[in-house]
Length: 260
Length: 248
Ligand SMILES: Nc1ncnc2c1ncn2[C@@H]1O[C@H](COP(=O)(O)OP(=O)(O)OP(=O)(O)O)[C@@H](O)[C@H]1O
Ligand SMILES: [Mg+2]
Image 1 (cartoon, each protein chain N blue to C red):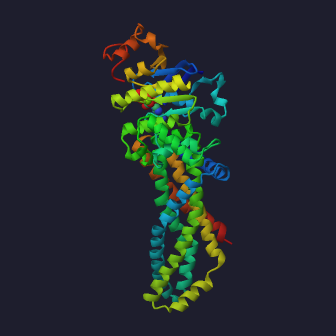
Image 2: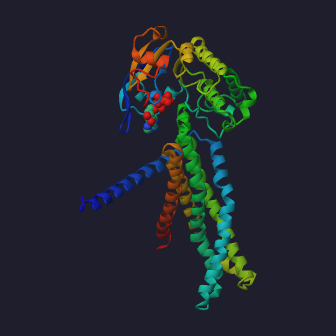
Image 3: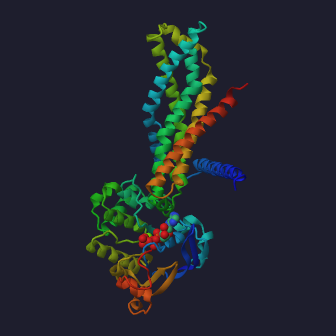
Protein backbone atom coordinates (compact mmCIF):
# COMPACT_ATOMS: atom_id res chain seq x y z
CA UNK A 1 0.00 0.00 0.00
CA UNK A 2 2.80 2.43 0.93
CA UNK A 3 4.27 2.98 -2.52
CA UNK A 4 1.22 3.01 -4.74
CA UNK A 5 -1.24 4.73 -2.45
CA UNK A 6 -0.13 8.32 -3.21
CA UNK A 7 -0.72 7.61 -6.89
CA UNK A 8 -4.05 5.98 -6.20
CA UNK A 9 -5.09 8.92 -4.04
CA UNK A 10 -4.00 11.44 -6.66
CA UNK A 11 -5.83 9.48 -9.33
CA UNK A 12 -8.99 9.42 -7.27
CA UNK A 13 -8.88 13.17 -6.68
CA UNK A 14 -8.27 13.89 -10.37
CA UNK A 15 -11.05 11.55 -11.45
CA UNK A 16 -13.56 13.02 -9.05
CA UNK A 17 -12.55 16.54 -10.05
CA UNK A 18 -13.11 15.63 -13.70
CA UNK A 19 -16.45 14.05 -12.89
CA UNK A 20 -17.54 17.19 -11.04
CA UNK A 21 -16.40 19.39 -13.90
CA UNK A 22 -18.44 17.22 -16.28
CA UNK A 23 -21.55 17.43 -14.10
CA UNK A 24 -21.23 21.19 -13.73
CA UNK A 25 -20.78 21.59 -17.49
CA UNK A 26 -23.87 19.51 -18.23
CA UNK A 27 -25.82 21.46 -15.62
CA UNK A 28 -24.71 24.77 -17.15
CA UNK A 29 -25.70 23.63 -20.64
CA UNK A 30 -29.08 22.48 -19.36
CA UNK A 31 -29.61 25.81 -17.60
CA UNK A 32 -28.72 27.67 -20.79
CA UNK A 33 -31.06 25.56 -22.89
CA UNK A 34 -33.93 26.11 -20.45
CA UNK A 35 -33.40 29.87 -20.69
CA UNK A 36 -34.12 29.66 -24.41
CA UNK A 37 -37.18 27.38 -24.34
CA UNK A 38 -40.66 28.20 -23.01
CA UNK A 39 -42.42 28.30 -20.60
CA UNK A 40 -40.79 31.47 -19.26
CA UNK A 41 -41.41 32.48 -15.67
CA UNK A 42 -41.38 36.28 -15.88
CA UNK A 43 -42.28 36.85 -12.24
CA UNK A 44 -39.42 34.66 -11.03
CA UNK A 45 -37.05 36.37 -13.46
CA UNK A 46 -37.95 39.90 -12.33
CA UNK A 47 -37.69 38.83 -8.71
CA UNK A 48 -34.24 37.36 -9.33
CA UNK A 49 -33.18 40.50 -11.21
CA UNK A 50 -34.18 42.57 -8.18
CA UNK A 51 -32.35 40.29 -5.74
CA UNK A 52 -29.20 39.85 -7.80
CA UNK A 53 -28.94 43.24 -9.51
CA UNK A 54 -30.57 45.97 -7.50
CA UNK A 55 -29.72 44.74 -4.01
CA UNK A 56 -26.07 44.12 -4.97
CA UNK A 57 -25.57 47.77 -5.95
CA UNK A 58 -24.48 49.04 -2.51
CA UNK A 59 -21.86 46.39 -1.90
CA UNK A 60 -20.49 46.54 -5.45
CA UNK A 61 -20.49 50.36 -5.36
CA UNK A 62 -18.65 50.58 -2.03
CA UNK A 63 -16.10 47.98 -3.10
CA UNK A 64 -15.40 49.93 -6.30
CA UNK A 65 -15.20 53.28 -4.53
CA UNK A 66 -12.52 52.18 -2.07
CA UNK A 67 -10.64 50.18 -4.68
CA UNK A 68 -10.52 53.15 -7.06
CA UNK A 69 -9.21 55.36 -4.27
CA UNK A 70 -6.53 52.89 -3.20
CA UNK A 71 -5.55 52.32 -6.82
CA UNK A 72 -4.95 56.04 -7.32
CA UNK A 73 -2.69 56.19 -4.27
CA UNK A 74 -0.69 53.12 -5.36
CA UNK A 75 -0.21 54.22 -8.93
CA UNK A 76 0.81 57.66 -7.76
CA UNK A 77 3.39 56.15 -5.43
CA UNK A 78 4.63 53.77 -8.12
CA UNK A 79 4.61 56.42 -10.84
CA UNK A 80 6.58 58.82 -8.65
CA UNK A 81 9.59 56.47 -8.84
CA UNK A 82 10.11 57.38 -12.49
CA UNK A 83 8.44 60.77 -12.57
CA UNK A 84 5.30 59.48 -14.23
CA UNK A 85 2.65 60.65 -11.76
CA UNK A 86 0.55 61.92 -14.64
CA UNK A 87 -0.43 58.35 -15.62
CA UNK A 88 -2.68 58.04 -12.55
CA UNK A 89 -5.99 58.95 -14.25
CA UNK A 90 -5.56 56.68 -17.25
CA UNK A 91 -4.15 53.69 -15.33
CA UNK A 92 -6.89 53.95 -12.72
CA UNK A 93 -9.48 53.92 -15.47
CA UNK A 94 -7.92 51.07 -17.43
CA UNK A 95 -7.22 48.99 -14.31
CA UNK A 96 -10.74 49.51 -13.10
CA UNK A 97 -12.67 48.71 -16.28
CA UNK A 98 -10.46 45.87 -17.52
CA UNK A 99 -9.68 44.02 -14.30
CA UNK A 100 -10.76 45.26 -10.92
CA UNK A 101 -14.31 46.28 -11.78
CA UNK A 102 -15.34 42.91 -13.20
CA UNK A 103 -13.24 40.74 -10.87
CA UNK A 104 -14.08 42.45 -7.60
CA UNK A 105 -17.69 42.97 -8.66
CA UNK A 106 -17.89 39.30 -9.61
CA UNK A 107 -16.38 38.20 -6.31
CA UNK A 108 -18.73 40.38 -4.28
CA UNK A 109 -21.68 38.99 -6.24
CA UNK A 110 -20.32 35.49 -5.66
CA UNK A 111 -20.28 36.10 -1.92
CA UNK A 112 -23.73 37.65 -1.89
CA UNK A 113 -25.61 35.80 -4.58
CA UNK A 114 -24.06 32.34 -4.95
CA UNK A 115 -24.51 31.84 -1.21
CA UNK A 116 -28.10 33.01 -1.08
CA UNK A 117 -29.12 31.03 -4.18
CA UNK A 118 -27.47 27.87 -2.84
CA UNK A 119 -29.03 28.31 0.60
CA UNK A 120 -32.48 29.02 -0.81
CA UNK A 121 -32.54 26.17 -3.32
CA UNK A 122 -30.80 23.84 -0.85
CA UNK A 123 -33.45 24.52 1.77
CA UNK A 124 -36.14 23.89 -0.83
CA UNK A 125 -34.46 20.58 -1.64
CA UNK A 126 -34.19 19.55 2.00
CA UNK A 127 -37.80 20.48 2.83
CA UNK A 128 -39.10 18.59 -0.24
CA UNK A 129 -40.23 21.79 -1.96
CA UNK A 130 -38.34 20.71 -5.09
CA UNK A 131 -40.20 17.39 -5.05
CA UNK A 132 -43.44 19.31 -4.58
CA UNK A 133 -42.64 21.49 -7.61
CA UNK A 134 -42.13 18.39 -9.73
CA UNK A 135 -45.43 16.84 -8.63
CA UNK A 136 -47.11 20.12 -9.57
CA UNK A 137 -45.78 19.64 -13.13
CA UNK A 138 -43.21 22.42 -12.82
CA UNK A 139 -39.62 21.79 -13.87
CA UNK A 140 -37.25 23.13 -11.18
CA UNK A 141 -34.62 23.77 -13.85
CA UNK A 142 -37.07 26.12 -15.54
CA UNK A 143 -38.76 27.62 -12.52
CA UNK A 144 -35.79 28.01 -10.17
CA UNK A 145 -32.57 27.76 -12.17
CA UNK A 146 -33.23 29.44 -15.54
CA UNK A 147 -34.61 32.75 -14.15
CA UNK A 148 -31.71 33.13 -11.71
CA UNK A 149 -29.03 32.30 -14.29
CA UNK A 150 -30.52 34.67 -16.85
CA UNK A 151 -30.94 37.45 -14.29
CA UNK A 152 -27.35 37.12 -13.08
CA UNK A 153 -25.95 37.02 -16.62
CA UNK A 154 -27.75 40.26 -17.47
CA UNK A 155 -27.38 42.02 -14.12
CA UNK A 156 -23.69 41.56 -13.41
CA UNK A 157 -22.47 43.49 -16.52
CA UNK A 158 -24.66 46.38 -15.42
CA UNK A 159 -23.24 46.12 -11.91
CA UNK A 160 -19.75 46.10 -13.41
CA UNK A 161 -20.52 49.23 -15.43
CA UNK A 162 -21.77 50.99 -12.33
CA UNK A 163 -18.77 49.72 -10.35
CA UNK A 164 -16.37 50.94 -13.07
CA UNK A 165 -17.84 54.43 -12.94
CA UNK A 166 -17.82 54.61 -9.16
CA UNK A 167 -14.28 53.22 -9.04
CA UNK A 168 -13.03 55.84 -11.48
CA UNK A 169 -14.84 58.48 -9.46
CA UNK A 170 -13.14 57.17 -6.29
CA UNK A 171 -9.78 57.55 -8.01
CA UNK A 172 -10.75 61.03 -9.12
CA UNK A 173 -11.73 62.05 -5.59
CA UNK A 174 -8.42 60.86 -4.18
CA UNK A 175 -6.49 62.34 -7.12
CA UNK A 176 -8.05 65.76 -6.76
CA UNK A 177 -8.26 66.04 -2.98
CA UNK A 178 -5.13 64.19 -1.85
CA UNK A 179 -2.74 64.17 -4.80
CA UNK A 180 -3.27 67.74 -6.04
CA UNK A 181 -4.44 66.85 -9.54
CA UNK A 182 -6.29 69.47 -11.46
CA UNK A 183 -9.90 68.28 -11.71
CA UNK A 184 -10.33 69.10 -15.40
CA UNK A 185 -7.00 67.52 -16.38
CA UNK A 186 -7.78 64.38 -14.41
CA UNK A 187 -11.11 63.92 -16.20
CA UNK A 188 -9.62 64.68 -19.58
CA UNK A 189 -6.84 62.12 -19.08
CA UNK A 190 -9.35 59.53 -17.94
CA UNK A 191 -11.52 59.94 -21.00
CA UNK A 192 -8.77 60.39 -23.56
CA UNK A 193 -6.92 57.16 -22.87
CA UNK A 194 -9.87 54.85 -22.36
CA UNK A 195 -10.78 52.74 -25.39
CA UNK A 196 -14.09 51.16 -26.21
CA UNK A 197 -12.73 47.62 -25.98
CA UNK A 198 -11.32 48.27 -22.48
CA UNK A 199 -14.85 48.84 -21.23
CA UNK A 200 -16.56 46.23 -23.40
CA UNK A 201 -14.16 43.44 -22.42
CA UNK A 202 -14.94 44.13 -18.76
CA UNK A 203 -18.65 43.89 -19.41
CA UNK A 204 -18.24 40.59 -21.25
CA UNK A 205 -16.27 39.32 -18.27
CA UNK A 206 -19.12 40.48 -16.05
CA UNK A 207 -21.65 38.46 -18.03
CA UNK A 208 -19.47 35.34 -17.82
CA UNK A 209 -18.97 35.83 -14.07
CA UNK A 210 -22.69 36.40 -13.49
CA UNK A 211 -23.53 33.20 -15.35
CA UNK A 212 -20.87 31.33 -13.36
CA UNK A 213 -22.09 32.63 -10.00
CA UNK A 214 -25.73 31.70 -10.60
CA UNK A 215 -24.88 28.30 -12.09
CA UNK A 216 -22.67 27.39 -9.13
CA UNK A 217 -25.28 28.58 -6.64
CA UNK A 218 -28.04 26.59 -8.33
CA UNK A 219 -25.87 23.51 -8.91
CA UNK A 220 -24.80 23.18 -5.30
CA UNK A 221 -28.27 24.05 -4.02
CA UNK A 222 -29.89 21.37 -6.17
CA UNK A 223 -27.37 18.81 -4.96
CA UNK A 224 -27.59 19.84 -1.32
CA UNK A 225 -27.34 17.00 1.19
CA UNK A 226 -29.95 16.37 3.84
CA UNK A 227 -30.55 18.65 6.80
CA UNK A 228 -29.11 21.99 7.90
CA UNK A 229 -25.60 20.60 7.54
CA UNK A 230 -26.23 19.71 3.92
CA UNK A 231 -27.44 23.24 3.17
CA UNK A 232 -24.46 24.76 4.99
CA UNK A 233 -22.06 22.64 2.97
CA UNK A 234 -23.83 23.47 -0.29
CA UNK A 235 -23.60 27.19 0.49
CA UNK A 236 -19.91 27.01 1.28
CA UNK A 237 -19.15 24.99 -1.85
CA UNK A 238 -21.14 27.42 -3.99
CA UNK A 239 -19.21 30.48 -2.80
CA UNK A 240 -15.80 28.85 -2.93
CA UNK A 241 -16.27 27.26 -6.35
CA UNK A 242 -17.87 30.38 -7.83
CA UNK A 243 -14.97 32.54 -6.58
CA UNK A 244 -12.27 30.22 -7.86
CA UNK A 245 -14.01 29.83 -11.20
CA UNK A 246 -14.34 33.61 -11.56
CA UNK A 247 -10.60 34.05 -11.05
CA UNK A 248 -9.77 31.20 -13.42
CA UNK A 249 -12.21 32.46 -16.06
CA UNK A 250 -10.79 35.96 -15.65
CA UNK A 251 -7.30 34.73 -16.50
CA UNK A 252 -8.53 32.79 -19.51
CA UNK A 253 -10.63 35.70 -20.80
CA UNK A 254 -7.75 38.13 -20.32
CA UNK A 255 -5.49 35.83 -22.35
CA UNK A 256 -8.11 35.61 -25.08
CA UNK A 257 -8.89 39.33 -25.17
CA UNK A 258 -5.51 40.97 -24.69
CA UNK A 259 -2.56 38.69 -25.43
CA UNK A 260 -1.80 39.78 -28.94
CA UNK B 1 -55.57 1.02 -11.17
CA UNK B 2 -52.03 1.30 -9.83
CA UNK B 3 -50.02 -1.88 -10.00
CA UNK B 4 -46.69 -2.27 -8.23
CA UNK B 5 -44.51 -5.28 -8.84
CA UNK B 6 -41.24 -6.15 -7.13
CA UNK B 7 -40.29 -2.57 -6.24
CA UNK B 8 -36.81 -2.42 -4.73
CA UNK B 9 -34.91 0.60 -3.47
CA UNK B 10 -31.72 0.87 -1.46
CA UNK B 11 -29.90 3.95 -0.19
CA UNK B 12 -26.29 2.81 0.00
CA UNK B 13 -26.31 -0.26 2.20
CA UNK B 14 -29.75 0.55 3.60
CA UNK B 15 -32.13 -1.73 1.68
CA UNK B 16 -35.41 0.05 2.26
CA UNK B 17 -37.78 -1.61 -0.21
CA UNK B 18 -37.08 -5.27 -1.02
CA UNK B 19 -39.78 -6.26 -3.47
CA UNK B 20 -43.07 -4.50 -2.87
CA UNK B 21 -46.12 -5.94 -4.68
CA UNK B 22 -49.37 -4.04 -4.35
CA UNK B 23 -52.39 -3.01 -6.41
CA UNK B 24 -54.71 -0.13 -5.71
CA UNK B 25 -58.05 -0.21 -7.51
CA UNK B 26 -59.42 2.89 -9.21
CA UNK B 27 -61.75 4.85 -6.95
CA UNK B 28 -60.69 3.04 -3.80
CA UNK B 29 -58.87 4.18 -0.72
CA UNK B 30 -55.71 2.31 0.24
CA UNK B 31 -54.07 2.98 3.57
CA UNK B 32 -50.44 2.03 4.12
CA UNK B 33 -49.41 1.34 7.69
CA UNK B 34 -46.05 0.32 9.03
CA UNK B 35 -43.38 1.31 11.50
CA UNK B 36 -41.46 4.53 11.32
CA UNK B 37 -38.60 4.33 8.82
CA UNK B 38 -39.91 1.28 6.94
CA UNK B 39 -40.03 3.16 3.64
CA UNK B 40 -43.65 4.22 3.27
CA UNK B 41 -42.78 7.73 2.10
CA UNK B 42 -40.12 6.32 -0.22
CA UNK B 43 -42.75 4.02 -1.76
CA UNK B 44 -45.03 6.95 -2.63
CA UNK B 45 -42.08 8.86 -4.07
CA UNK B 46 -41.17 5.85 -6.22
CA UNK B 47 -44.63 5.85 -7.76
CA UNK B 48 -44.40 9.58 -8.52
CA UNK B 49 -40.92 9.17 -9.99
CA UNK B 50 -39.30 11.43 -7.38
CA UNK B 51 -37.17 8.46 -6.34
CA UNK B 52 -36.04 6.01 -9.01
CA UNK B 53 -36.56 2.40 -7.92
CA UNK B 54 -33.64 0.01 -8.38
CA UNK B 55 -35.93 -2.73 -9.68
CA UNK B 56 -39.58 -3.52 -10.28
CA UNK B 57 -42.37 -2.14 -12.42
CA UNK B 58 -45.01 0.47 -11.74
CA UNK B 59 -48.09 0.43 -13.97
CA UNK B 60 -50.88 2.97 -14.10
CA UNK B 61 -53.96 1.63 -15.89
CA UNK B 62 -51.79 -1.05 -17.45
CA UNK B 63 -49.17 1.39 -18.77
CA UNK B 64 -45.62 1.40 -17.48
CA UNK B 65 -45.08 4.81 -15.87
CA UNK B 66 -41.35 4.81 -16.64
CA UNK B 67 -42.02 5.62 -20.29
CA UNK B 68 -45.24 7.60 -19.96
CA UNK B 69 -45.16 11.33 -20.80
CA UNK B 70 -44.21 12.98 -17.48
CA UNK B 71 -46.47 16.04 -17.59
CA UNK B 72 -49.56 14.11 -18.57
CA UNK B 73 -48.82 11.54 -15.87
CA UNK B 74 -48.22 14.06 -13.09
CA UNK B 75 -51.27 16.10 -14.02
CA UNK B 76 -53.38 13.19 -12.76
CA UNK B 77 -51.75 13.25 -9.31
CA UNK B 78 -51.94 15.28 -6.15
CA UNK B 79 -49.55 14.78 -3.27
CA UNK B 80 -49.50 15.90 0.35
CA UNK B 81 -45.92 15.65 1.58
CA UNK B 82 -45.16 14.50 5.11
CA UNK B 83 -43.54 17.85 5.90
CA UNK B 84 -46.18 19.80 3.90
CA UNK B 85 -43.40 21.16 1.59
CA UNK B 86 -45.10 24.53 1.07
CA UNK B 87 -43.27 27.09 -1.06
CA UNK B 88 -42.27 29.61 1.56
CA UNK B 89 -41.69 32.42 -0.91
CA UNK B 90 -45.37 32.38 -1.94
CA UNK B 91 -48.48 33.31 0.06
CA UNK B 92 -50.79 30.53 1.16
CA UNK B 93 -53.41 31.00 -1.54
CA UNK B 94 -50.75 31.02 -4.23
CA UNK B 95 -49.41 27.73 -2.86
CA UNK B 96 -52.86 26.15 -3.00
CA UNK B 97 -53.58 27.50 -6.48
CA UNK B 98 -50.07 26.75 -7.80
CA UNK B 99 -51.16 24.26 -10.43
CA UNK B 100 -54.19 26.35 -11.41
CA UNK B 101 -52.00 29.37 -12.15
CA UNK B 102 -49.76 27.76 -14.74
CA UNK B 103 -49.68 25.14 -17.44
CA UNK B 104 -51.98 24.40 -20.32
CA UNK B 105 -55.36 24.84 -18.61
CA UNK B 106 -54.53 27.72 -16.29
CA UNK B 107 -57.39 29.85 -15.01
CA UNK B 108 -57.58 33.58 -14.31
CA UNK B 109 -56.00 34.81 -11.08
CA UNK B 110 -59.27 35.84 -9.41
CA UNK B 111 -60.87 32.50 -10.15
CA UNK B 112 -57.81 30.58 -8.93
CA UNK B 113 -57.89 32.55 -5.72
CA UNK B 114 -61.56 31.78 -5.23
CA UNK B 115 -60.90 28.06 -5.68
CA UNK B 116 -57.98 28.28 -3.25
CA UNK B 117 -60.11 29.95 -0.58
CA UNK B 118 -62.80 27.31 -1.07
CA UNK B 119 -60.25 24.48 -0.70
CA UNK B 120 -58.85 26.16 2.41
CA UNK B 121 -62.34 26.25 3.87
CA UNK B 122 -62.68 22.52 3.22
CA UNK B 123 -59.58 21.81 5.30
CA UNK B 124 -60.92 24.04 8.07
CA UNK B 125 -58.94 27.21 7.41
CA UNK B 126 -60.44 30.71 7.37
CA UNK B 127 -60.17 32.95 4.27
CA UNK B 128 -57.85 35.28 6.21
CA UNK B 129 -55.19 32.59 6.10
CA UNK B 130 -55.02 32.91 2.30
CA UNK B 131 -52.80 35.99 2.38
CA UNK B 132 -50.38 34.82 5.07
CA UNK B 133 -47.04 33.21 4.29
CA UNK B 134 -46.40 29.55 5.22
CA UNK B 135 -43.82 30.56 7.86
CA UNK B 136 -46.58 32.41 9.73
CA UNK B 137 -48.65 29.24 10.19
CA UNK B 138 -48.51 26.51 12.83
CA UNK B 139 -47.37 23.02 11.84
CA UNK B 140 -50.90 21.65 11.72
CA UNK B 141 -52.10 24.61 9.64
CA UNK B 142 -49.24 24.09 7.19
CA UNK B 143 -50.22 20.45 6.89
CA UNK B 144 -53.78 21.44 6.03
CA UNK B 145 -52.59 23.98 3.45
CA UNK B 146 -50.54 21.16 1.92
CA UNK B 147 -53.69 19.09 1.82
CA UNK B 148 -55.62 21.91 0.16
CA UNK B 149 -52.86 22.18 -2.45
CA UNK B 150 -52.97 18.44 -3.12
CA UNK B 151 -56.71 18.50 -3.85
CA UNK B 152 -56.91 21.95 -5.48
CA UNK B 153 -56.78 20.78 -9.10
CA UNK B 154 -59.13 17.86 -8.33
CA UNK B 155 -56.70 15.15 -9.40
CA UNK B 156 -57.78 11.57 -10.07
CA UNK B 157 -55.17 10.08 -7.77
CA UNK B 158 -54.15 11.60 -4.47
CA UNK B 159 -51.36 10.58 -2.10
CA UNK B 160 -51.57 11.70 1.51
CA UNK B 161 -48.42 11.25 3.59
CA UNK B 162 -49.61 11.36 7.21
CA UNK B 163 -52.46 13.84 6.72
CA UNK B 164 -53.52 13.95 10.37
CA UNK B 165 -50.22 13.98 12.28
CA UNK B 166 -49.91 17.17 14.24
CA UNK B 167 -53.64 17.90 14.19
CA UNK B 168 -56.00 18.03 17.15
CA UNK B 169 -58.59 15.19 17.30
CA UNK B 170 -61.42 17.35 15.97
CA UNK B 171 -59.41 18.61 13.03
CA UNK B 172 -58.16 15.06 12.39
CA UNK B 173 -61.80 14.01 12.20
CA UNK B 174 -62.54 16.77 9.69
CA UNK B 175 -59.62 15.69 7.51
CA UNK B 176 -60.56 12.01 7.67
CA UNK B 177 -64.05 12.87 6.54
CA UNK B 178 -62.69 15.05 3.74
CA UNK B 179 -60.49 12.26 2.39
CA UNK B 180 -63.40 9.80 2.57
CA UNK B 181 -65.59 12.32 0.73
CA UNK B 182 -63.02 12.87 -2.02
CA UNK B 183 -62.92 9.14 -2.64
CA UNK B 184 -66.61 8.30 -2.42
CA UNK B 185 -68.09 11.46 -3.96
CA UNK B 186 -65.46 12.54 -6.46
CA UNK B 187 -64.38 8.99 -7.29
CA UNK B 188 -60.71 9.70 -6.69
CA UNK B 189 -58.14 7.02 -5.92
CA UNK B 190 -56.40 7.68 -2.62
CA UNK B 191 -53.28 6.27 -1.08
CA UNK B 192 -52.78 7.37 2.50
CA UNK B 193 -49.95 6.77 4.93
CA UNK B 194 -50.94 7.05 8.55
CA UNK B 195 -49.96 5.88 12.02
CA UNK B 196 -53.30 6.86 13.47
CA UNK B 197 -55.55 3.77 13.81
CA UNK B 198 -58.73 5.84 14.01
CA UNK B 199 -57.74 7.43 10.69
CA UNK B 200 -57.17 3.99 9.21
CA UNK B 201 -60.67 2.93 10.16
CA UNK B 202 -62.21 6.17 8.91
CA UNK B 203 -60.42 6.34 5.56
CA UNK B 204 -59.52 2.85 4.35
CA UNK B 205 -61.21 0.50 1.91
CA UNK B 206 -58.07 -1.60 1.91
CA UNK B 207 -55.09 -1.70 4.22
CA UNK B 208 -51.53 -2.74 3.46
CA UNK B 209 -48.83 -3.18 6.02
CA UNK B 210 -45.23 -2.49 5.01
CA UNK B 211 -42.55 -4.21 7.05
CA UNK B 212 -38.96 -5.24 6.30
CA UNK B 213 -39.25 -3.85 2.79
CA UNK B 214 -42.22 -5.97 1.70
CA UNK B 215 -45.99 -5.84 2.04
CA UNK B 216 -46.45 -8.04 5.07
CA UNK B 217 -50.22 -8.16 4.87
CA UNK B 218 -52.91 -6.59 2.71
CA UNK B 219 -56.66 -6.92 2.73
CA UNK B 220 -59.98 -5.12 3.12
CA UNK B 221 -60.36 -3.01 6.25
CA UNK B 222 -63.11 -5.34 7.51
CA UNK B 223 -60.62 -8.20 7.72
CA UNK B 224 -57.89 -6.24 9.46
CA UNK B 225 -59.01 -6.80 13.05
CA UNK B 226 -59.59 -10.50 12.60
CA UNK B 227 -56.38 -11.35 10.74
CA UNK B 228 -54.09 -13.72 12.62
CA UNK B 229 -51.03 -11.99 11.13
CA UNK B 230 -48.84 -11.28 14.17
CA UNK B 231 -47.28 -8.15 12.61
CA UNK B 232 -50.64 -6.53 11.98
CA UNK B 233 -51.91 -7.54 15.40
CA UNK B 234 -48.90 -6.08 17.16
CA UNK B 235 -49.14 -2.88 15.12
CA UNK B 236 -52.85 -2.15 15.44
CA UNK B 237 -52.86 -2.96 19.14
CA UNK B 238 -49.69 -0.97 19.77
CA UNK B 239 -47.91 -3.70 21.74
CA UNK B 240 -44.21 -3.51 22.55
CA UNK B 241 -43.85 -7.32 22.41
CA UNK B 242 -44.17 -9.13 19.11
CA UNK B 243 -42.30 -9.91 15.90
CA UNK B 244 -41.62 -6.20 15.19
CA UNK B 245 -38.53 -5.09 17.13
CA UNK B 246 -39.01 -1.91 19.12
CA UNK B 247 -35.51 -0.63 18.31
CA UNK B 248 -35.24 0.10 14.58
N1 LIG C 1 -33.09 10.58 0.12
C1 LIG C 1 -32.70 9.61 0.97
N2 LIG C 1 -31.40 9.32 1.12
C2 LIG C 1 -31.00 8.36 1.96
N3 LIG C 1 -31.81 7.63 2.72
C3 LIG C 1 -33.12 7.87 2.63
C4 LIG C 1 -33.65 8.88 1.76
N4 LIG C 1 -34.98 8.91 1.88
C5 LIG C 1 -35.29 7.95 2.79
N5 LIG C 1 -34.18 7.34 3.24
C6 LIG C 1 -34.13 6.24 4.21
O1 LIG C 1 -35.15 5.32 3.86
C7 LIG C 1 -35.76 4.81 5.01
C8 LIG C 1 -37.26 4.95 4.90
O2 LIG C 1 -37.61 6.30 4.91
P1 LIG C 1 -39.13 6.78 4.81
O3 LIG C 1 -39.10 8.26 4.89
O4 LIG C 1 -39.77 6.18 3.62
O5 LIG C 1 -39.77 6.16 6.12
P2 LIG C 1 -41.29 6.18 6.53
O6 LIG C 1 -41.78 4.77 6.48
O7 LIG C 1 -42.04 7.18 5.75
O8 LIG C 1 -41.18 6.60 8.06
P3 LIG C 1 -42.08 7.63 8.89
O9 LIG C 1 -43.30 6.92 9.26
O10 LIG C 1 -41.24 7.94 10.09
O11 LIG C 1 -42.34 8.81 8.01
C9 LIG C 1 -35.15 5.52 6.20
O12 LIG C 1 -34.22 4.65 6.79
C10 LIG C 1 -34.45 6.71 5.61
O13 LIG C 1 -33.29 6.97 6.32
MG1 LIG D 1 -42.73 9.01 6.02
